[in-house]
Amino acid sequence: MDMVEAQAITEEVLQTHINRETQHDNQNKCQQIMEIDMVEAQPITKEVLQTFDSIHVEGQIIIEIDNEQALGIQVLESVLVIEEVAEKISTQLTRRRSNLKQKESPTMILRENASLDEIKVGLVFDKKKSIINYFSSIAIKGHFEFKVVRSSSTIYLLKCNDDRCGWWVRAFRIKDSTLFKIVKIEKKHDCSVNTMKADQRHVTLKLISGYIIDNLRGPRFEVTPAFVMVEMQKLHGLDIGYHKAWRTIQLTSALIRGTPEENYELLSSYLYMMTSKNSGTYTNIKIDDNNRFLYMFYAYGSSISGWNHCRPVISVDATFLKSKFRDVLIISDSKDANNQIFPLAFGIAESENNNSYEWYFNQLRNAIGSHENLIFLSDRHQAIAYDIAKVYPESHHGICIYHLE
Image 1 (cartoon, rainbow, N blue to C red):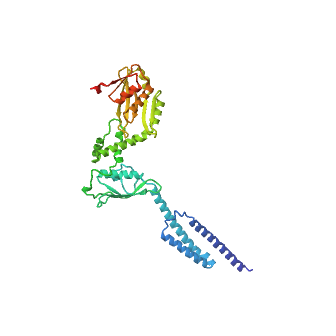
Image 2 (cartoon, rainbow, N blue to C red):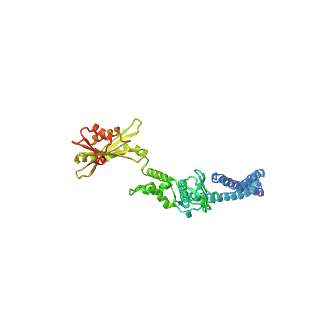
Image 3 (cartoon, helix red, strand yellow):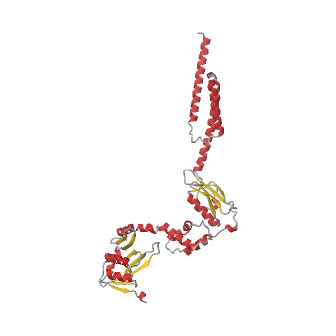
């Protein structure tokens, strides 16, 4: 074989080898593009999709062309197109990650007491309840009312009650969070004077309770409905009725101290802790066949031991409890050597009747016993006199001089 033919064959082999390596590199680039995260690649534009379609058509043409031409010309053109598409995809994915990062990382979380000037598009509240309370407060201060156009777990849309007014708010929940973001807001009001109200439906019990809860926590003075009415008039110029003020006090008290039902359920635990922390304390509680509360009695250990040094005189009386269930509180006290009032025992019953007083005096005798020449003083309630004679037959019973006059 002469040298010319050998050289031609060698060049052909080398060219084939180069073309195969080029084809292999192109296949690797295509494989890398196909492995792009499908979730992140969703927002590909129509232009990019059309480019992929053109590549697909050109790929079919390449297959139909002679292998030597495909490896030499068409493959090189496809490589340029693929690189251009990859660059466009990378740019779009970078923009999308940047937008998601801005959505997931809000610049500022607003408070419920933020001013209207602080509100603007893009700011967020920590939860839906906060945004509800905020705009309710804004409506109260501005003496206008709004209606909820749409409210769900992901959207909150408000509009002024006056259809001619342009005030409105739109907020959305940020995905995978409790944050609500303001996306649209029009602050300017065009309401007529007739729509301005001094008594609004947005003034809810929970909203008013936020203004008086600190006063109820403090023991300095008693919070009355009249006090609540004056406070709301002074703070916001609002006229709320007596009944609404009273219900607000009940709600706020329940938030601080719990409901009466919850407190009665804790009564047994309270008496147990009382006996654990106060040595010698006597307690008892009685329930009916349906496991409902009937009576309760307790006497502190210090009162039981101190009774031995008091005068043999016990005063008994009862007062009404102003709670939901209208029970009565029974109290027994004496006088010590310094002529000071000395508390002995306390009890709770549904009312002043023979059964409740009989149970109470039996518990009193179990706790403190009896003294020689013991005297009971009370008002003229017949149940007290009847049950003293039944439980303490050896004692004497007298009527308070105040009730004799």
